[in-house]
Length: 385
Image (cartoon, rainbow, N blue to C red; front, side, top):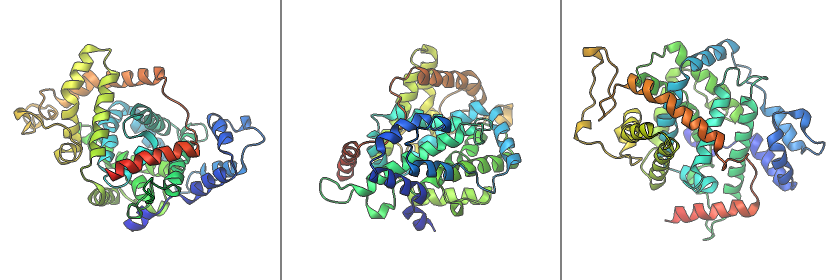
């Protein structure tokens, strides 16, 4: 099952991207990207392949339950701040531990760290669109945003599988399966649902079994639009946990790329709060401890290169039972609930301010053949080293 997932891509979007490139419609598609949310504004020359893809991929699965989705949106509305912090310090960085294939894909699209800010911003904007109330409905922006991300994935896949390394070796090692394959996509979906719930509970936030199931259902619906095969979706919360464990066993490990990405993540978060000296000092004091606490030492320190704590962090201190307080973050003396209350909202506001003024952001576009091959050369050089 898992080897088959690793070898599988996304036939609908793969065929669409291949047809667009074969017909020479790349520039026209790039002009259309900002207009995708408003079909009435599409020009008459809109490529038929793109129109067919958008029509076919916008349909919610027959098993999507509006009642469950409504509950999931309500849960996320209440827990928006801690959920976003969990995404930033658990769900996103944990995928840096994906040792095989992922780093080369990132080298192709973002040269690992050079465009980290743009890539993280695009990812978080996608998440914000799909988890907003009614985001995955006809009135929301989630479906169109997900369709754009799906096209981006398949453009990357197109280049990675068609180009050759300067050494005449195939860039993509067949043992890695396909770039952005079904196994990696499903694992990412679980990182935003099942794994995120684990993070919320570490923050001492009550997440009921119903809440966990509802959140998984929402992300399964998102995953369906994103191109994940329904057959790869976990049927239950229990199966989701089992799947995640298997994915981690098969794919997690230490890599230079994973360490570079994690350090870039830390640097980015510190940089966006530089204008607030007190917040910057607090984040610099606590962010690595927060990563160790949420990710666990084995992944954070052993795989991703997060610095080890000082002597005071050898033992995690639990005060809840004795004093009615939440767990203390490893090697700092601030209870988690106090840390969230004092810092989380301010960090997210700084992130929003960064988005509002970030002049490096650009809409997704399909790169030229020269751009794509340049990225592949960088990826191959990294593979060779």
